[in-house]
Image 1 (cartoon, rainbow, N blue to C red):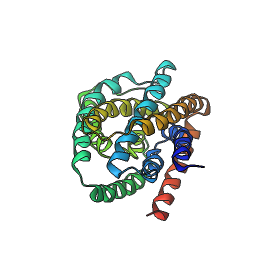
Image 2 (image 1 turned 45 degrees about the vertical axis):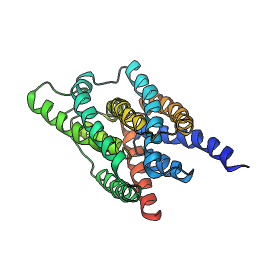
Image 3 (image 1 turned 120 degrees about the vertical axis):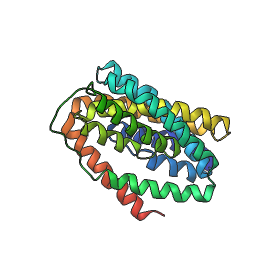
Image 4 (image 1 turned 135 degrees about the vertical axis):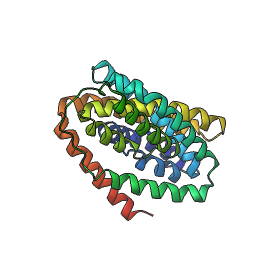
Length: 251
């Protein structure tokens, strides 16, 4: 089979699994960004094109969580401005970094993000949304600004950090995943503007990848609600171990 045809079949297929993993846990970009590089794209172009897939996935994934009533509205309102501000800065940095340097940054941040997820945050309090006080509002804003920078620059693995913060805040994994989808949608929208302006997006590959990721996201959102918090926590742990192994055995 011709390689050009094969890669167009592989992208939505891998996108489906990445979208499912992204929605349930995070880290799907650990698979899709290297896949796009394998299809012949330069690293920064692959990073930008992958963001189109993330954006399409997040539209469908967030809408599914929202319509099922699992979206923490207050945290969403507090986090959106610092997230997109950070994403603009991170996206700009991603467009001016040299290709060779970007490979090194990508590998470094992928390792760091995977190691971070081995910490299992716990909270004695249980809440469905961000508490209404100044301290939590300021902390939430700062945390999402930093995560926004990382999301705009590389994005791979940021979902693990969002989940960790949400669980530390007292939320369950289902609501944490809803916030993660919302942040991905918000930051990817701003990042896409920067990447498109700089001519970094390959549309066909990005759309094919995104369609598969969207299908995976919708199915994962439904499944996560039925499976429950304990299963998602185990799924996240398994995803962390998988990505840690991949990072150790690949160059």
